[in-house]
Length: 192
Image (cartoon, rainbow, N blue to C red; front, side):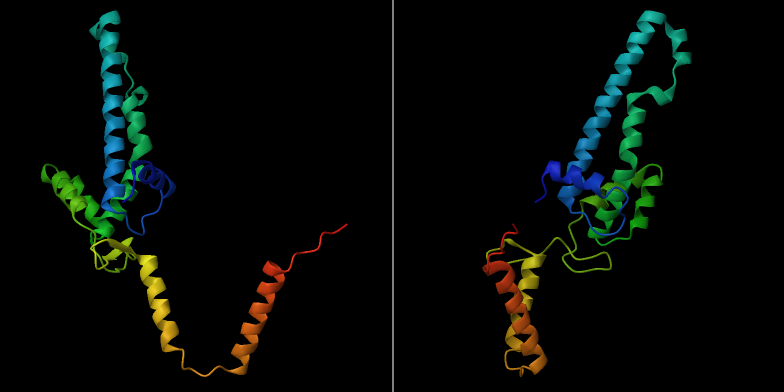
């Protein structure tokens, strides 16, 4: 499972990436962090507005610039990474990223989108890529995709064990072993 710091790092590292997939943990950790940042920014804005009204009176509200609010800055910083992360999360749940536009529908749109974000990962390869955890072993623990690839490569070796070795294959293997021995086993001589 992805932790909070890894999820936040990935959200900003993949800031412009709308292809691929994002697990539920990746999405919800970022959702939680961005929500907390947003709440803190709104609280700071409310405190600054209250102090402005106390010191200068209500007419001072007309001089406020929305671009100087903390919440505007937080929204500007988090808009792109959260949008692309939401698209990748929809891909992981088996939907097109265009389903994110349902959030623009007033009323139920945001709720429908949150339900779609909460749906489980599609445990199969789709046009959006392979899942990060594809299946489970006999004990019910998740098996990583790379472990499945290694297993399939092992089966491929077993199927090819009776295949005759051509002289080109034998020479290529000898050259590979020779290069490995020269570079890893023999100690390079120090230049004086």
